[in-house]
Length: 219
Image 1 (tube, one colour):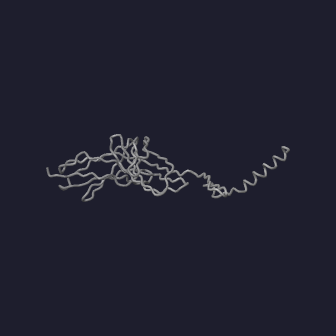
Image 2: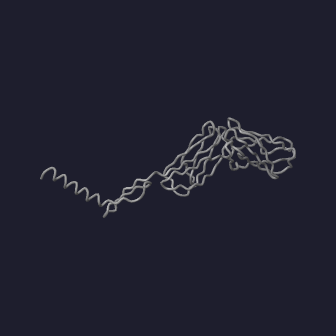
Image 3: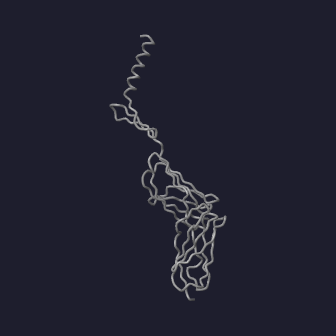
């Protein structure tokens, strides 16, 4: 048999085999099925989740899902952080914890739906301020110092209740903020204090921080 004839036979066989291949799907998920078999070869774009936002400068951030740590990162000098994951599909609920250089913590909950074969973005996340008070028991007329950290250069709103009172301050370039509350017009009793980022300079507002309990006494 001549080499030319052998080549023609091989080409015919290859053509017949290729005619049994059916292409399915679209450009985002390319699949091929061989007729008469259960064999599949599938090549899909990876499912990607990106979460990014702001917290206190140089804070350490950990992210958990269902109680298990799935990632960690450090914010930069302006408080920016980013996480990137692959393989998450469906409705998810992540808990992010931010710890600043003074070991003050802030929390953020992120519910999100991840679609298979697509990039899901959760950006412009903004942590509430980390908050602390200098004393849990204050005599009427003595100052109550409320302080903490947040994204640098933010307007911080501080609240006490009840009744509801509000105060404003700014976080510095180092993320720190503080305010001294005059308790002269407070009555003895139990109160709570919390804070939020009222304006981060980009038009974003955070949720509320953790609430801290304190007591005002007559003496």
